Image 1 (tube, rainbow, N blue to C red):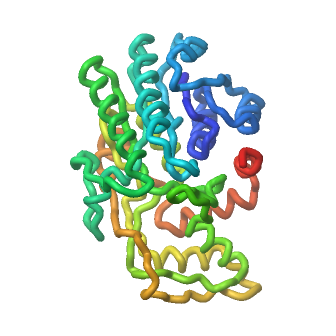
Image 2 (cartoon, helix red, strand yellow; image 1 turned 45 degrees about the vertical axis):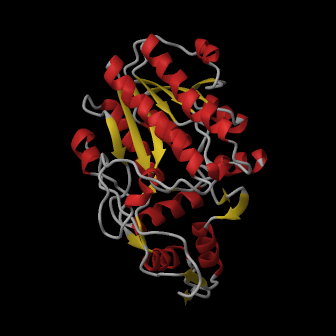
Length: 336
C-alpha cells in the first residue's frame, strides 16, 4: 500500500510510520516537528510540510496510487496551555473537511481519523462495555468540552462523506494510549502537570512509595501504542472498515492492579521495592469505564496483543531500555 499519514510527527504517528514500513508499505508523511521529520526522511519516508487548515497546501501532496489517508493531526487540550475554541474549529473541523475534500477530489476512498473516549463520557460505568455505535454523550464543561465538540463535528463530517460520496471513512475512538515517548507531562485546564502514570513509573524506578488517591478499585481500559498502529494497518487493508470503532484493550484494569504491575515491572529488585499507600479520603475525579472492541474485531480482525496490562508495561520497559524511540523524547524537549 501507499499511505499518506497526516500528523506523522506525533507520538502515535511515529509508531505508525515504523509499523507501516515494517509491513512493506510506502509512506508519505506530513508533520511539524523538524527533528522527527528529519529522522523519517533518513528512514526513506517521503516528507512534506502541511497546514491542514489551508486547503491550498494540499496541492503539494502526491495524488497518484494513494491507497489511503490516516489523519492524526489534531489540536488536543493535553498539548495546549490556553484553550481557544477558534483553534479547535480551524484545526479539528476545518482541517478534517480539507482532508476529506482532498480524498474526494483525488478518488482516495479510505481515510482513518481518531476521536477521544471522552465523547461517550456520560456512558462510563464499571464493568459495562460501551458499544462503538452508542450515541455520543459527553460533558459540556471542563478543558475537554470544546475539544470533544470539535471532534464530534469531525466525526460527523467523515460519516457524512461516507454516505454522500461513498468514502470508506473510519474513526478510531481511543482511550489513553500508553507507550514510550513524549507524553510524561500534559496540560490540564491550561496548567502543566506530570501525568499520573509517569509519577507511578518514576516512583517505582526510585523505589519510592506510590500513593493511590480515592477508590483503588476504579478501573480503566487503556491501549498500547503498538496495538493502535496495527489497528490502523488492519483497517486500511479491510474492505469492511467504515464508521466508528473502539480501539482499546477491551479490558478494564483497576487502579490498584495497575500500580502493582508497575511496581513488579519497574522496581529494581536489588533496591527498595515501592510500597503502596492507600488514601481513599483524597479526591480522584476519575470514573470507571471499559470499551467494547467486538466491532473492530469483526470488521478487520482487531485483536490487541499487549494485554493484560503487565505485558504492555514489559514492552514499554523494553523500548525504554533499547532507546529505539529516544528521538521522540528529545524532539519533545526541543519543542518545549
